[in-house]
Image (tube, rainbow, N blue to C red; front, top):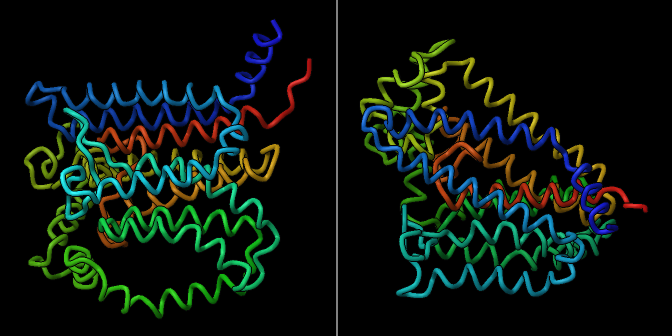
Length: 372
């Protein structure tokens, strides 16, 4: 009986506003995805069914995550750290890992292809938050911050080895979010930004050819011969032609006639712009703003600093992915293979987004002590 009562109380403490917002984003995305996949024309709703199945599996993952107190999971942060590294290493082994878009980031699981770095986002947040927690208030000098950064460097290095620059940046945002909330000295932040800007030309030299092509395309948007510019040009045409209210769902010419590439995942925001116009795009952005705002509130209300770090890391991940995906469709940011959370088609990214949402809800439902 006590266990039943505690379960009921924990469920009541869930942030139902956040859950409703995610359901709204996913439902909106599913509608747009039906147009992006041309299901209404071909009659093939296979990708829609797979997306719904992925969402269902994600819900099961959330329930599984909620069964364990996040502090219990945190006790095994060293094991999670090692497992995370192994999952990034395994894709680099010939015969096991496979390449997509120039990055060796995938493994085949029968009929499914899985990007291990997606799952590592969750395990990394759980393990790295525990490491950063022990350094709270002790990040005022370079000497103090170096050990914390060293813990994260193997992850960034392995992602560069794949090479997967987009995911490496996602991890960098997770790391930066946690360090910032831990009281990182503002003077150090300024120095890091300056060093990063000065290092950009050196980083460019060590980038893979397809990554340099994307940077070149961003710097020369008028050159249609550069790889990536065609995608952005078509995206801009689609969004610009949508106007205020759009051409109507299923009526976008750039989308329906196949001019817009990767429209079901990387450039699905352009489909929204063309078919639902500025109002549709504003609706999505507003939902994401509410989504991030709720996570800020949960981070503030967490019962301990470890919980705050977990939520902050997840929020940093989502914030970057949202800004990056929308930014690249309107030519404000170089193109990377970063999907739009809960909207873009893709099992790995959807499951990861829901699993990380589960971490946030885990922290939320245990923000108060249960009394009997």
